[in-house]
Length: 140
Image (cartoon, rainbow, N blue to C red; front, side, top):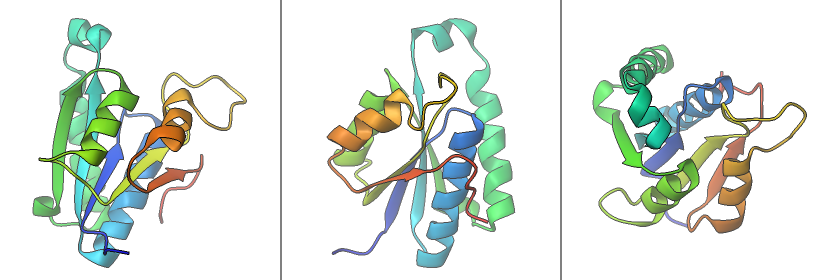
């Protein structure tokens, strides 16, 4: 098995996604890996506007809290649904990664479900190893 050098983590601003980012950054600090924070932008978000800037601020705060160097953290915004964007990032250059990390549920989660649709679909289709961070786990 190859060492983990580049970790992609899905981020939509939800509490579970924030826990996934903390988990990925904690691993990156331990392994000196790069973290690529991935956000999927669909048509509705394009219409709303302004959301990505708030997410970038949150990622900056998490980077500082987790003690990572800002040069270890990169931001990627992709057009499309979250599963498609994360699958493309995980398997292809220029953002090929060794590990993909997501929260168990995102903003669209239905109460009572253990896995959201994105994490469930990625578990079935990811071409790279996948970590699904359970709800309430934040890597601290």
